[in-house]
Image 1: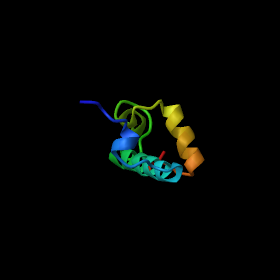
Image 2: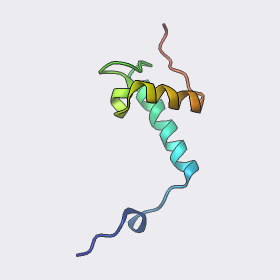
Image 3: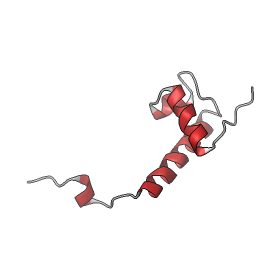
Image 4: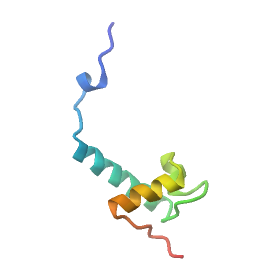
Length: 69
């Protein structure tokens, strides 16, 4: 049995669709972490990203953490 590449087996997402999914995923992680970005229970850890990478992406997407200082 020959395996097919993912693009052949399923639908391919456009850049806009990928960006929308990334944004929604970040928002879900922020909600789950109650707005916390850093630390083992922060959104960055949930997403498997460095906190600085997450904050850069949030800045690019114009998202803010809901956590109060």
